[in-house]
Image (cartoon, rainbow, N blue to C red; front, side, top):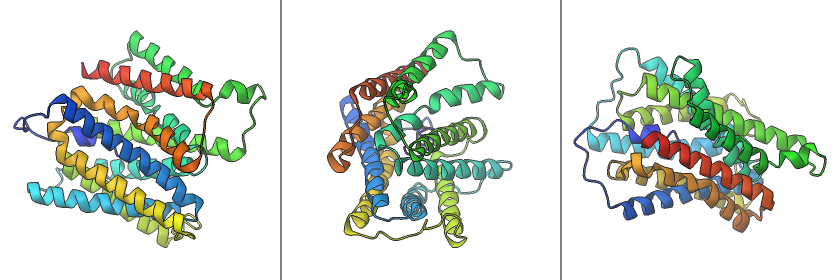
Amino acid sequence: MSAPRSNLTSGHTDNSPQHFPRQIAVMILATVACCFAGNHVAARLAFENGTGLLLAVLCRSGVALAILAVIVSIQRHSIRLPSGSRRWQFVLGLMITIQSLCLYSAVARVPVALALLTANSFPIILALLTWGLGGPRPTLKATALMLFILSGLVLALDLPGILGGGVTVTDDWWLGIGFALMAATALSVAFWVTDHKLATLNGSVRSMFTMLVVFIAMIIAGIGEVLPGGMALPQAVPGWIGLAVLVLLYGGAFSVLFITVPRLNMARNASVMNMEPIATLLFGWVVLGQMISPIQMVGGAIVICGIVILTLRKSA
């Protein structure tokens, strides 16, 4: 999954340029979603060939930081943070750091599509977090949608088969799912901080500082050897290819999204980005040979449909 999309959709003014025709906007967003999906599959390829987790996040965040710095410079935005926002900006960067590490940790342990589907449960966590911190209580319809999404996730993970003894998984599999849920939780906190504490800060500036925190955190973690082998270089050619592709796809998708977002009418078209897990499933099969069972596919479809409906309801 990418950086919080609220970072991308807020922060511009009422003088936004004219929107693209919807067909073009949908095509751009679908391409971006496929690039983000390919980034996750490339990451798994890199990890399978010895690439360190910290190195992958460092390279990815470094490219994103460079792109954002150029955008901020061209648009001549002030990089001075308002009083009282610095600690929240740090919290946002820390949450995205945790989300990136946890999601890649999940991708390294379970089929990429399952890791992404599990991480995409964040709308449920965000709704509960917002309610717990004094926000509006989820409506009956929203609650029903959350249960619908959870039922799909149960099928996608094939929990009935696992608990019934018909499907055997390793401890590493459970750890991977746990990391995916941690990634979803961190992303939910990031969304809450963005919407409630940093909403007035320009989106490009906010995201640039977020990537800066991620980049610095990876350097510190690498120097301190927080994660053994975290900065390991790829041990084979496929690992180098995976690392290069994940950086290129993430950087390309990131730059296209930031450059075109004022013209994409995200309030209407953001749900297109939810095709990312579907593209991940296809790429994971083609590149990695990963397959999931028919019942898991049904569960994945339920999760995606539920998230799309929830997105459309909020943007209506």
